[in-house]
Image (cartoon, rainbow, N blue to C red):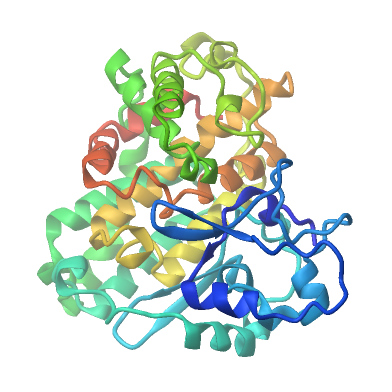
Length: 403
């Protein structure tokens, strides 16, 4: 009931939904919006008021359509949020909830399993593909996918690993597994022998993983990558030359280490990026070291973000722009330096040098709004930077400050 999604999203409508909503009988209710939708780039969306709210929000911030006609009369997009429902293996779908919803971040509300009937109704209205393709599975059989994902879960659950070393280990395992290949990974007996030593060696390698700074080009590429996760629904309306130039200028300034994330939307703190000192080695080294137990507490929500996606297989295929298994894994693990950077910015806005639980929550909400849904990352040419940043993963995490 916070109404946040009714103020921050442009709700997509089908032509049939527009006609159905137009036919609703409001009787004598006053000020009902007649011209409630607009067409942008060939798609229909609910109009938004000057204050940013949906035209159907009343003065108390409650959906008038829901209040008058009930949940089932609302648009499919409204009824489906914050669920993320995608096809996975042939004939199957998985469901998780998006962490850009404040209630989800706070772990409020009913469990997904208690809402099965409602979800099944939504599923009947959605259209799904045939599931993961052989190209997306990279030659792996289902049991190999499940087994590898379980190994990532083991690393996530390892109490001896701090957050930064946990993520280094997971990225290292992803790259090693990609090198082994799908056929090798699908050999049950061989992998049963290899996995214990493979995980043990990766953990042993963690202290030796590269821990030094990154160059100016990599910093610029990462800040550009951050900008893709800052862009919001408002860009749907920004089709004019002036708007595009302003956006390009904002991104360019961000890439150079200047600017302010607040220019991308009210969700971001109003603090100049230069004051944050993301890659300042002296600032990072001066931070007090945080015990691993405290790190786990601070990063518990992010671990949940990763764990759910690994469990539901919602990190590749249709859940992430049709990518293959390993490309999806790399993109998923790159969310850690993103969340780390965003959390640093929120902490700096509070006047603190150390990240707190609330900073990580804000950062996850900002990141998950775009992960798999970014208006920019849908282009392969832009996502090519993911592989480049992954090759400097350990250095990037070190440069951002590990505590």
